[in-house]
Length: 102
Image (cartoon, rainbow, N blue to C red; front, side):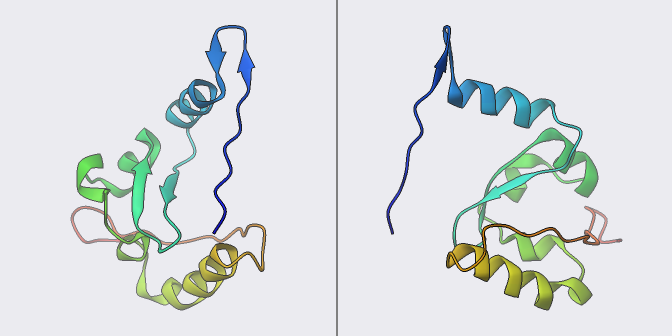
């Protein structure tokens, strides 16, 4: 699979720094995964939503945090994006919290 890197600079701020600042300061819970669905990065809003330490989410499958009723549809949508047959998807999910409640 081809990997693409975007290089943009705005003054002395890199695209990576712009992304990181927007990602970390967002009130929208977000997790970045690899193509297999393993979490590689979460923002602060995500850790508040699920109630886990951010380090505990790393290398976990995102499926571990969503309700079992949502997993099948979520897996199908995620796989379609990972395979390139779909550019993105929106889905409302019920997440498992640190105390195992939803």
